[in-house]
Length: 106
Length: 106
DNA sequence: AGTATTATATCGTATTACGATATATGGTGT
DNA sequence: ACACCATATATCGTAATACGATATAATACT
Image 1 (spheres, each protein chain N blue to C red):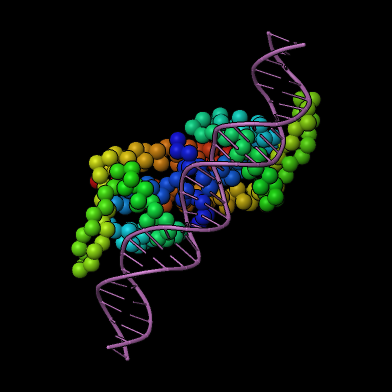
Image 2: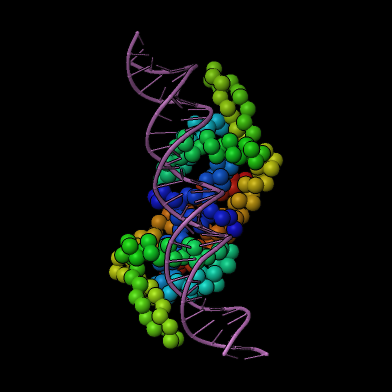
């Protein structure tokens, strides 16, 4: 899949994933790779996005003991849940627009 | 609509528009604004993209007299038609993946 | 002990959308 | 004739973003 096609939608994917369950960065990457094997979701994308989402207060990270090791586990805030709903709506509007625009006339 | 959400899909939109009918840059911009008022499609995006698509041989530009003025009219090449079909397929695959990934479980 | 996997983090680069700007021409109004 | 505006082509710079590369360290496996 195109390197660029994900652009602008990765925040939505991360919020949707964290809505399923709180996760730390590495687990999130594995989860997304499992859900969408067509994309990369390397650490170079995940961590900066998590930090950005935390700055925006959409998620909050907490150091927790997971299997005997310190892991930074991220979960949605109230604002994050709202943002997710709004981004979901935006996605649906966007995708239906593009689908209509590229629909084959013949 | 988000500034970035279009990323990676503008080539598809331009190819789809030129499949409807050959157009010059300005007319293409007006056409796309009419189809998708939510986005900008300023000249700073259209012309570089047209040049890029011409370099890729997906479209070809020809100087033509349109209403008494020289206009650079672009039309799809054979390769461009193939590329459009492939990009259409990619879009459908991409959008169904994302839609599935962000589907509300509750 | 040594290697692989897990895990967090940052940097640099390429791509892309898009605003700003330059420039020129045709049409319309006065 | 002149001003003004819409049309038209083009380029530049900037910001946002995905992502590869790299650094570092702890845990698990052999």
